[in-house]
Length: 510
Ligand SMILES: Cc1cc2nc3c(=O)[nH]c(=O)nc-3n(C[C@H](O)[C@H](O)[C@H](O)COP(=O)(O)OP(=O)(O)OC[C@H]3O[C@@H](n4cnc5c(N)ncnc54)[C@H](O)[C@@H]3O)c2cc1C
Image 1: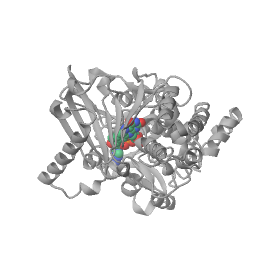
Image 2: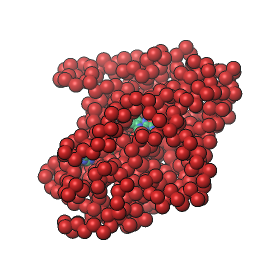
Image 3: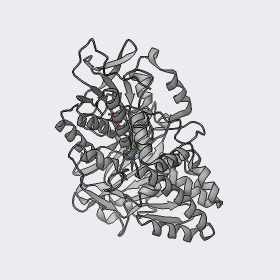
Image 4: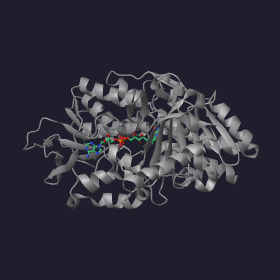
């Protein structure tokens, strides 16, 4: 536990309370929460715009989302709508378009399924496909609801803040005990308790893989409880104007509350003095000091690059044995003629032709067509297709100019060919094509190996080993998808609330 640092007098007499490295949604939620508590906050962002993997970019009349586009956490009720809450806390809100179907699965052997917002419809369709498992299906998803209801019943702050834990336990002991019970459990264990059909278990694997990039045995049930239930509760809501609007509004609110954000400011080193983080050095050698430093970079970047090796704590070495970087992605950002999208198509799709390929290099394809929800993202008569598939950076390293270009083209052609099974004639309808590789993700997002985030390197007890926000280095905190509870915009918002709560306690701001 980090000791209170309120009384530590800095010989540098700094004006800033918190320096945040990175303006991803995790960093921005931390920054805005701290600013709203009265802290003086500066966010340093290496890129030109805020949002990291949750940003958008504009090209030739199109607004493309860099990564995320299936957005949880923008609902109106409960406590799990953390993006809505983060925005409201600083006087901002996003207008949204609700998505009636979270996802349409296109799986091997003609296995088609829509995940409807209406829970009953989803369960009825799945039970129709597996009538002999209908009881097990209900029991499995009911367990997820139990977890979601517990999460949604309590304010979600820092598990490292004893005051919060005491208050929340007194207020709702049952919810706390429910969450504690499921914390060390993975989805596979629960699924096999109720379901025996191998094909259905493969589907549960895919239900997990499509957001955790892990099969059910390695996916914590707490996260599944959130995803599998909230899609039928708060729902999937697309922010009008593109996903990047969320980060842009957080950045606006941050400034309204006296915080500041500097772009094109790459942090090259976290400065340590007397074994405490006291500031950062930028790539232009400028030094900035603050009472605390919060890193929104991945853990591999934070402890592998930004911190001098002699300060790397033992706990981080243990962490890097337990977790490894997930693959990055090959991404296609397509502008297509409207006719290329059949009538009544849904926004999100997942395509896999062979179960053995689920985790394979460029196996599963994720598809998003956000213009079906917000046509203003593309010129009239056009749609956007964002298709991406997991890919390791190793296959892309050491490819220079024409070889790299050719590898990109080969990947893109293969993806487009496969997508024609959902969108016949797609190839002919393409008017714009941007191809991103793991190298693009590394370059533009500053993420080691372009990774989507940490995944277990071995079977772990659910979410239990996932690190929280404090680190073994005094006054250095981490936030974002390398922290509890992991990847996803709403998950990193949770991490941001928790980080601000813990830092707020340490700075006596709560
Ligand atoms: C292709 C793809 C699809 C996805 N789809 C979804 C989805 O549908 N739904 C969903 O909820 N989630 C999705 N995600 C995941 C989600 O986008 C991420 O988990 C989340 O945005 C991560 O936020 P973060 O704050 O942890 O970090 P990041 O978004 O990585 O932000 C970190 C920021 O820090 C900056 N930075 C890094 N190092 C430095 C430095 N040294 N100095 C200054 N700045 C620095 C970076 O430039 C970046 O802006 C997707 C991700 C990808 C890549």
